[in-house]
Image (tube, chains in turn yellow, cyan):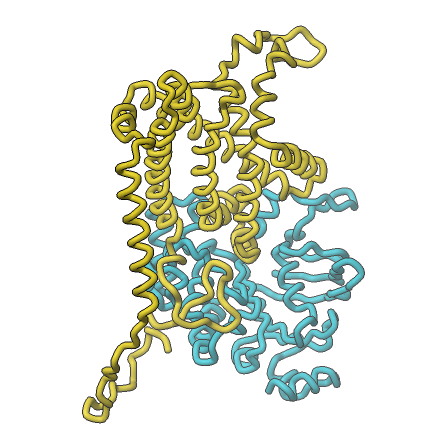
Length: 316
Length: 250
């Protein structure tokens, strides 16, 4: 039935309607017991932790807003943001490369992913740290000719830059697979409809395919962002030592009291993660326009536009 | 308007179209009918180069589709040129293929803005007119998921019309609809035919074919079995295969 035409049927007479059901609700005693046990255990743990001297809560309070720690937190955040920007840009490029018909371009992308996803990020970071040993100078220019620019690797690239590059290039291999999955999730009919309207490949990508693939891309990307925030704790391999984790370890090396510093670092990580989760919620809402905001109540024959929407139920 | 000269199409070793020759004149409505797998959809998709023809020549309004002919040789068209040809040819799909992340209005505005470079106000004006024409002026801010199948298909027709095509292709436009929604889409198509639009319609709606079509083509196994005036073919099919098919659908 469409919402178009006038609706002919009248609501049934009230007198003929049966009384609403008022049944005694089914009890679930075991649920209550389980919840009680869990609350009890949690309370015991919290009370115990608050009193336990090893956690050293006064030290936690003292160091949580320590200048060295808050600076390190900012450094960690920067590492994460820069690395993710590299990863997302390069990831999109690699994903598109893997979907082109050109076999060479395809293989290059495949090879990149094979190498960077197939080796541990820690090992890669150590490699980047040794970049200056392998390539003392970096030349820019035409091969076999006198370079236009030449600079010493050690002077040009700080450990921070190397850490960002190392994290970003590793993450790009994961991001490219996420983006590729997103692009493949959009129904082929969408591309055909756009093509039939005379849109170019690039217009189709930017206006039709990418916005729709965002719904598939965002949740795992949120995962990757959070994972990246925590992976920054490995940059000590470069070695870069001003990130949150390495800095708190360094401080505890002076105070001989590692546990409160670990708690301090964890609280900061959790704080950032929580903010990121809020951001992800709003991004997802933005890209769910037209599809995610409502469950259609019944399927139309053969499904209209899978996977985005199983079709409309007619009634507005 | 549309001239197909011994058009063939193969997917690998599977020949889907075998030497199809057809003509559609300006303002004419042609109905393509046949069992599934007969190649009628493929033929339609060849006309706007969604599929590449393997043999023969296919032209729309004198323009060879997908190729340029010079000195007796064929040159593949640049995608930009192919896109330019497609602008003139509207297509309506069986499964609507509306853009789900855009409202009905945005769906209709998209191509004129992005492809033709119309300003937002111009595109919106045109889109509102077209949505009004298909009877959906009050649904312009709805997302496709909140529209019924028939309404979605009417938006899809408006979207195709927004590019001001000289030819409209319909690929089983009512096959995915609930029976009671078929009529509203056919009504829009009838109106379009009356306004003088050249149309090629792949359909199983024999009533529509009889009422609206100027020519009726029956295809089976990639071959045109029979063609002629719909009233004649429907009333008095010559070929045995046509008789068998029509006896089942009529």
